[in-house]
Length: 434
Image 1 (cartoon, rainbow, N blue to C red):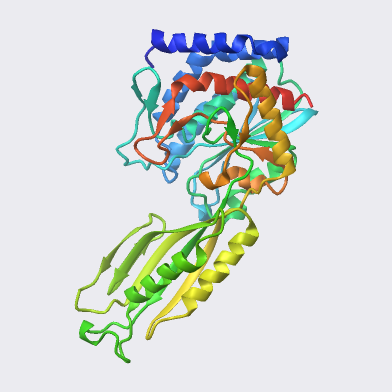
Image 2: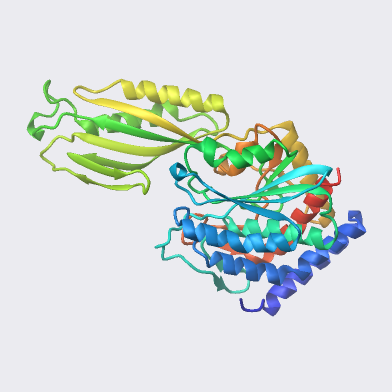
């Protein structure tokens, strides 16, 4: 990795200078932790570059495992114990890396990240690419290999400051966050077990800024709509024998979803793939397929797959009931069925989550970054912290800052990583002293 330019270094100095007068509330140990983060920053960026250059698309099992190995080595160096869990064959995912520091003092923390990205092995977007002094583009640079590095180097700073001794911290790095393996009760078994012997969860998904964090996330569910019509010459469409055909019926259903189900706060649903015609072939795993049909033949079948997002389980079930009712009200000579697949549960806002947010806000203000407020859950997707929300309080959005996640335009703001790592380290330090 090429050296940081003078301009970037100057920005870091200015940031530290700006914060200097605001660090009166920081203890001697906390100031030491911040300095260690700064001293390790170049190493952290080198590590991040190397990891971004390992393709770890969810279905690239070898790549996901390869991305985990450097973390195992780094965590061993700071006295933590890594364990790799292979997934059962039916889950069809690479596995997960869990790392643990044993202890009995202070709050017990569960830190959450993920190793995989949305970019497959054959994606043209493969490598770290610095653009100027402040931006780097790369697959997973921000979502969320950057967050994983914030987590690692925050803990490394605590270790070097002698602040990890006798503190229970579990790090969970899933290999399938971007497309979770099924059944969920198997692919998320280890994190749910870890949550039940922890007190607070901290998620290191993408940060929305120094002054926001996530105390609520919407859950997500998949849905699949299958529609059948009567294959016939198009000259007979609409008559009693031929009816409306599969495509018209699908259009009715989707339109009524839009008009009759849409509207509740935080409830969204999206048809992401649609194939229709005389014959349809669809690969669920790859979410791609082919359709054959002719303009003079009434469509015989349609398949639509989509997603549903919700803030509570009640909202999810109410939406599903409305969708089923619409699907059952068929046009002539058609039939339809809809099925749902649970993916991520909701993480509703709670008083406990607010307390963790307040702790983060206090750290932020003591560092000179100002207060931290709750981010709008309607502007965030689902994440692994939701799987532990029923057991423990927590917040998310403690990772790096950038934009363009899930696209070839994904980038990371290099100027913010050091300060975000310092903030994470101080938050972990304070929570493990309570």
